[in-house]
Amino acid sequence: MKKGLSLILLLVIFLAPAVSADRGSIPFIQDIDIFEPNQDALIAWNGEEEILILSTKLYSSQPTKVLQVLPLPSEPEVKKSSRDILRRANELIFKNLFNELRLPVLRNSNPKVPAAEIKEEVVIGSHDILVLKVLNQNDFVDWVNNYLQEKGQKNPQIPLSLQKTINNYIKKGYNYFVFDTIEVGPEPKTNEAISYQFKSKELYYPLEITKSDHGQSEISLLILTNKNLVNYQGLAQNRIKTKNSALNLSPEQLDYISPVFVNFFSQNIESEVIEPQVKLLSWSIKDDLANFDQDLIVDHQIENLLKNQFNYKGRTYVDFKEVENYPFSTPEKLTTLSGQVEMRMGSRMFPWLAASIEGKVLFNAQTKKLISNFADQGQYHRVRGYYRPEAEIGMRDPIDSMPAMVKIKNVFYVTEIKGWKPYSGLALRSNGSISNTRTYLWLKED
Image (spheres, helix red, strand yellow):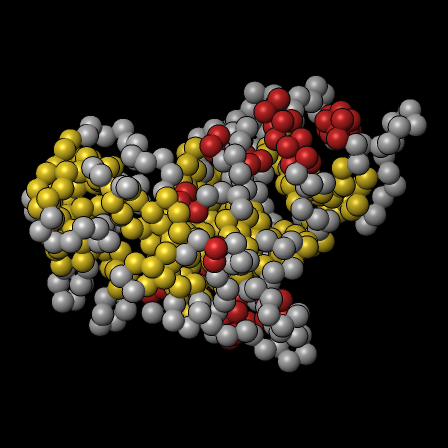
């Protein structure tokens, strides 16, 4: 590997009651429900290539075949993988958290450009996998219907919403698709883990392909990186919840997960030298799948971010911008809280700091985090929001560094501070590095 590559290891666990969280699903028999109670994925990205390992547990209301569609930015190499890699990654992550064949082109009868070119077809266990490149967008849906008929589906019907999504991927330059046909039945079955390796300049995970599905999905992302993930080109960063502070991991721990990643993340394969300052982050995304109108696409290019700088109380923030959708919307019944601002502190063991009014500790209703970057103590302000008897924040025990949930009583979730606007930025540290998480500030309106 070239020196200076970004190092990313992303473990993704999807919990969706009756949907596919990363791929569009087409059952061979119409009006059959497909259930995916859990799905594990591991993504490794070094700035130029990505390895995506998927393993799913599926079942259906009655026996059928299911075609799952995975859009990719470049041609992948498909291999059999092992769930042991996911198991070891899970084991290592939680341990650290708590310790501290090419076929000819298919052609139509007329001489126009073929709809698709098959790049590879391989059978891995129960997976019948087809890798193809789209050549003619206009005829691609018909090509897929013909493919489904060849696989045994009598009257293939690709949902119109899924057709639109596939065409949208093609328009954006995603000309490679992986078709994975598997048998499912009423009993839950865990399928073999499959590895896809492909060129990618960004950390990429397809979410928009699920737009034709519906239902709440909670996505837990565990990320390993030594670079700043600062440029969110797809899914907005404010839709990603940061669950814990960064944790450092060693090269030995990467080797424990799989020697493949030691080579993948090395400056060069011969020396097997891992770049320093590799850190582990934990993200969570929760939303209805129908709302996933963009994919997760992140890189570490900071040039544009440096243009918008702001200095606040001696600290410089980059990519500084006004928070969208303010005042924050909520289904809760709103009330007004007025009074002098006072700063509240936690205990010596858990020393949190936050603003309060009338004894109520202020939380940001959008981020669900404490509000500390606000007005000076003693100033009078009015805020809108809703009251809760208590809330919890995640901190670390100072004695054993174990994660702990700290309860804070008498809290007020703020949707609006009268006369003030919220902004957010990435803190620029003294050593030149940039924080991976955004800091929220409240500034007076002009």
